[in-house]
Image (cartoon, rainbow over all chains, first blue to last red; front, side, top):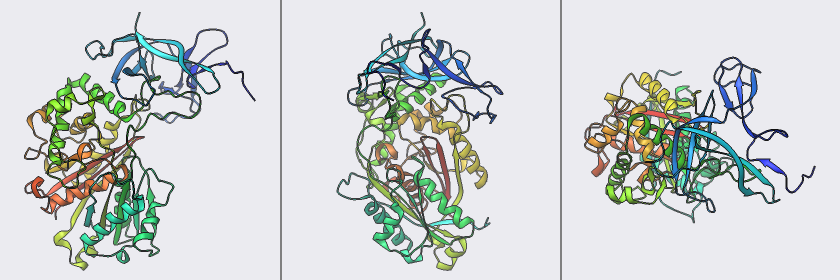
Length: 140
Length: 382
C-alpha cells in the first residue's frame, strides 16, 4: 500500500503518535517483576515470565544517567552533540540527544533532571516524509 | 570431560597493518602456517580447524584458508562473536580437546578492516538516527561507560588518557604492533576529541591482522616431546550479558566480564594476585580502566589510582597490555583474541624481548564483544 508523501512518522517504533493527543515514548512493562523494556517483546529477559508484557506510556521525565559529547560522527551528522543515557521516571532507560545545553562537561551535571520533548527530527527520508523524534532537555 | 589439560604448543601472529591488496584467507593462512611452524607440525597433523572472522562470517573463511594451505578434509568451524570472535574460536578448540574428540587442533583469527567509525549504522528503514537518538558509534558507547566510571569514582580525563600513553609506550617494544610511537600525555589529551573523554589516540586502531594457535592434549604433548615449549590453558570462560538494568541501551561489558573472570579464577584455582601479566580489551582507553576492576586487578574505585601509580605499566605490579594493546598494536576484530594468546604465551616462554615481563609464569587474556560477550583465558608455564 502506498502512503501519502507528506505523512508524519515516528522516528523509531517506541515513539507513538496518537491521532488525538501528544506524542509519547512507549515502554513494555513486565507484569511479574515490573521491569520496563524499550521495544516490544513477549518474554521478560530478567525474570523469564511469558506473556506478561504490557505496553505502557512512559512519563516525560527522567534523570541523566551518563553521557558523552560526540565530536566525530558519520559524514553529514552535525557535531558536537550530547549523546545521553536517561533513566525514565518509573523505569526504563532511553538513549537520545540532550539539547538546549552547552556541550561542555562543566555544564552537564550527572543525575540532572531532564524532560522528554518531541519535535520534528529535521531529517526527511527519500520520499520527503517528515519524522517526529524525541529529545532530552534540562528540566523546566 | 577429560581431566587432562590442554596446551598451546605453537602460536604466532603477523605484524598488524593495512593490507588492502591481500585477502582474508590469505592473511589467515599466513598466521596458520607460522603457528604450525612454531609447533614444528604441519596441517596434516591437525584434526580440526576453528576459524574466527567477523566481517565475512558467511564466507567460509576457515575452509578458504585450508584451500591455501592444505585440503585435508578436517572439520572446520567458523565462529563470529563480535570482538570476542577469535577468543571464541580458540575456546571451541579447547572444548573439543577437553571433550576427548581430538588431540591436535588449529585455531585461527583473522580480520580485514575498513577505516573509520564502527557502529551506529542504524536500520535501513526511515531516516538515519545517528546523531538524532544519541550516538551508537563504538567510541560513544565506551565514552558513556567511562563517564559512568567518572560519576561513580571521579576518574578524570587525564587518568583515562594515561592508559593510551602507557599502551602506546609499550608498543614501541613490539615489532608486530601497528604503531611504534611514543605519545606523551599532552599529545594524547590534545589529539582530536572523538567522544569525550576519548580522543583519537584513546581509540583502538582499525587494522588488518591474523593470529593462530595450535592446541594439543596433554597426552599428545608428551608423545611429541614438546612439553618444554608448551603453555597450559588453566582456564577458559565465555559469558554473554546477563540481565542488568541498562544493558540493552548502554551495553554492560562489566557484568559479563566479572562473571567470566570469576569462572576462570575458579576453574584455575587462582586469583588475580597470581597473575604476572594481563592482555585485556582496551578497545578504548576508558574500557581499560573499567576492566582493572572487573578482572579484580584492584578494588572497585581504585582503577584511576592504578594507572596513576604505574602499577599496570611494564615493570609495575601487574603489567597490562605490554603488547601495546588494541590502542596501539591494533584491533583486527576476529584476530584480537588469538593475538592476545600469542602475547601471553610469548612472555611465558621468556621470548618477548625488550617488553618481557620478567619471570612471568601466569597470564590472562580478556576480550569483550559488543552484543555482548566476554571471554577469558588463563595461561601458565608448566
